[in-house]
Image 1: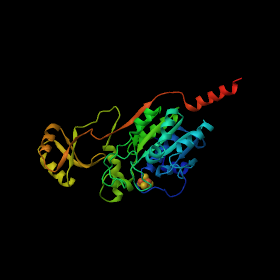
Image 2 (image 1 turned 45 degrees about the vertical axis):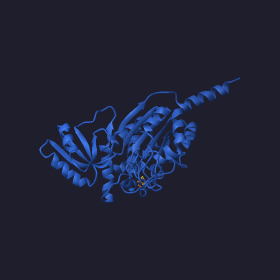
Image 3 (image 1 turned 90 degrees about the horizontal axis):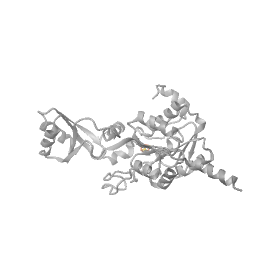
Image 4 (image 1 turned 30 degrees about the vertical axis):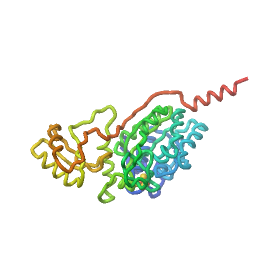
Length: 344
Ligand code: SF4
């Protein structure tokens, strides 16, 4: 990542107006990564077209970005982008979409664009709900999470968007979070250079809706950093084994009380315990111990715990999942048109 001052990116790429996002929203981070990626690649602004649909993520390029943007209808950004790319194959055509917009309402466009391998980059911002309309269940909401339309927990299972895009035929597929800014910027550069359909899912913090989703307590201003830390705690890098010897104790009641009890139970061991937010289990006690077997044995005898979870349970894999070559749609289409034109 380059070390140009923020003012450079602001003046060159951002329209001067107040941000439309709630304070602490992850969309600003993603915009930042995107402009750094196009700047580092030296792509002229006039060769970039950003297309978006409806939802908070649609506002990342429009109206924020100084450049060509197409703000379209709900779920249809990929369809509009397909038309633009076919008309002008020299454009870097980038779709910004959300999980509701791109995987729910526009899910059909997503899989068929991937199947065609059209040279479009889709950056799908996954905040795990329909955030802009009030935090309803989306096809990405994790099982059991509370939303405005599932106040007692989500009975559905989410799409794994990386597997969906890969199975549909996308030739570049990656997943990062707003914690992984260096990796995300690198991935956007790879996707822009890639010839074919590239898909990047970005798990992003939405403090406004994820407070309910994850059952977070505490002042609003603390939530963005807590959720980003949760992404760090709740993910692991593809192909890299998790470091450390630790487990999670899932409290039945007050996590603070459980932390005290856990600390007492492990007092004479080489161990430490602290409260962390876990993407799958909420507020839990993380226990790092040299002798994990011994620590687990003592914790099992403790009251006030739902159960223990190992270091990998419920975690989300991040990284680059697919990077391959296959004939690209606009080139194949031009070839078909050429054949039709020379036909006697
Ligand atoms: S509702 Fe959530 S995703 Fe939308 S702008 Fe606010 S914080 Fe960001």
